[in-house]
Structures are given as C-alpha cells and as structure tokens.
Image 1 (cartoon, rainbow, N blue to C red):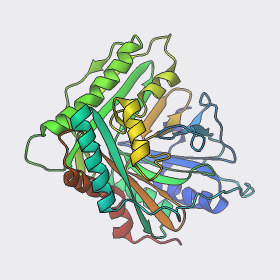
Image 2: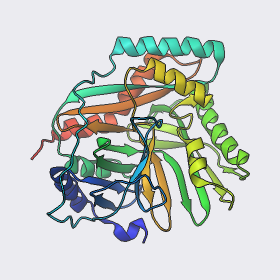
Image 3: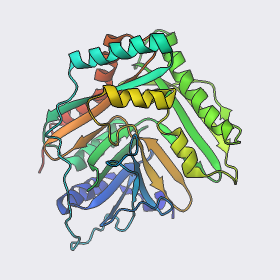
Length: 355
C-alpha cells in the first residue's frame, strides 16, 4: 500500500490532528507537494526499526537526547476512543530565542572564520513567542498557502509537536531511482537582479557535496541545470540530482552521509557542525534533520525546515542561512526574517486559537 491509497481529505486530517493532541497520541500528518489530499497516521508506540512502514523522524545530529525513529501507521483517521494517554511534554519555557545583537555577533565570528579558512557554515536562530494556536487549522492553512511544499505535522512523547512546510527534498527512492534536491541561496520572490556570486557559490557547494557522496558510493549521478525554485516568500537556486540505485548500497548509510547536507550545516560538514554546536545557544533538535514516509513501494524524505516546535502555549520557529566569506551579517538576518514569515504569517493573519 502506498501513501496515495491512505490519503484523505485535508479537513479530515486537520480534525484528526486536534483529536490526537487531545488523546496525547503519537501521530503524523503530511501533504505531498502538488497533491489535494493528505495522509494521517497514529500509534501508541514508536519504533527505532526504520525498515518498518510509517513516518520517519530524524534530528539534525543524533546524540543522547535526539535519535531517529518511526511512528507506525497503526490508526488512520478512525482513531479509537480507548487509546492510552502517555504524554511527556516538551516545554519551551526555558527557551529565550536569538536576539538581534546575539545573532550579529555570532554571524561576524563565522564570517571572520570563513575569510581565514574558507568553506560554508549555516547559522540558525530561534524565534520564540507565546500564542495558543489550533494546530489542525494551521496544517490546513499551510496546505492552502504552500501547494508546492511538503506540509507536515507530527507529535511524539520524545519530540513534542512540530509543524512546517518544507521546500527541500532530501531523498526519494522509487523503483530503484534516487532523487535528491540541492537547494541553497535565498532572495525575495520577484527579485529582478541576477543571483550574486555568494548565493551561486553557496548552492554549488551543496551540489558538489551530494554528487561526491553518490559517486564515492559507486553511483553515477545525473545533475540538472540550476533553476529558480519558489518557496513561499523567498526563492532558491535548485539543482535536481538523480541516480540509479545499485544492489550493494546501504540506503540508510547513504542517507546518514547526506544528512545534514551543506544546505543545513555547511562544508566541510564535520567542522561546520562542530562550530554550529559551539556558537549556537539553542539546540536545533529536529530542525535541519529530516522527516518523511516509508512504505512498501516508496521512501520519501524531506528536510525539516520552515518549521516550528509548539508546546501548547509557546511557539519556537527555527530559521537559518548559509554563510560564506562573502556574507553580510545584516543581509543574512533579514533573510531569516523573510523565511520566518512562512509560519508567522499563517499564525498571525488567521489569529488562530485553541477551540
């Protein structure tokens, strides 16, 4: 059974999201880009066995506090009324967000490092604000507003609740064909000028990294010409990369090598991740990791970005930008402000409240 056979009307999915939150039940919901329906699944349990079918959730970096797991499809929208409550909330009360002065200081430290050492580092910030929202309605609104995004929502007792609209395909596998997206460089939609060299170089780093990972595993990547890809209020440079799966490939080892790509971490990756963990005061947790579906016929994974965590009272929106030696700290701050509108506009314009 593939995901399309489980898809239902989006309004029903929104109602099931709210019902599952009332039950404190592990659940997932997603809408694939370009589709008019969505998928909802729930379970009392989660599993570390990624070979089983369900919704996969992986962190930016695995550690003792964040690991990848799967929520099985035990229930659809017909959730029984006798499910157990087992919620262990992840509260955001201790989070303060990243203020302007703090971000600019971090950014300038990174730019100075890159001028001496080269490469790329992705700096993120956290935007915290207090507001109660109706998650089911937010999911439905995101599907309307962003038809070409992978709109997702999930809750587990390990992660708390996350919701977002991701423009970036990390990895898909169907009928032995691998598809990966190299997405980087950002500017407001409708910009009349050509892409600057900073954005072009930033995106090329991502493309080269992905191609090298595939080639080093004995695969032969096909790389498209770069093109502009709209993602809500911004657009990016995008390159599509395809390869034919070979029998010797360990899929999860390949995905672990890809994630996080330089679009979310930087390059060289290990050094970039080390600097990120030292300089950022917040824990990215599942931002910058990946989410998606595994079933009998398909594996479909998207990067967890343009997303937020929510604890029932506070929202924590995560946004980031890629830095090279050519970056300007104020420009990058403004870029994160624009990216944050993917979620902030939906929440504020609809003034959603818990029913």
